[in-house]
Image (cartoon, rainbow, N blue to C red; front, side, top):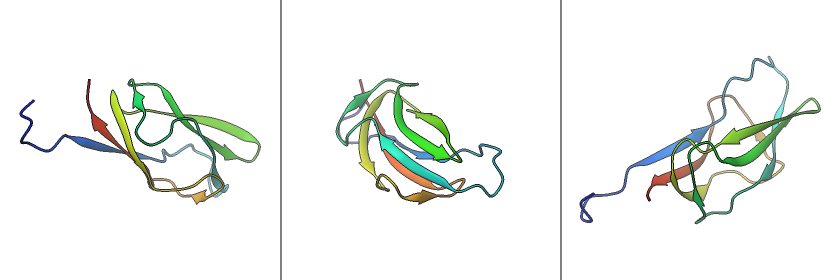
Length: 87
């Protein structure tokens, strides 16, 4: 990768969990900003009606920033974090 080009980034969005209008809450961040992740690593937990759902890293790289805090309410399609591709 050319060091002068910006690194590709990808956002983690809340998937459609098929739970209808049930409120979603980010219950726990498992990875802090700046941490390296591998594709498929668990990075956060969502809670909805007593059900816990794991969110996984969409790529291998680094968690650049979190857009929401623990206990924040979420909506389907909402971006909650940004990842940067890396080794």
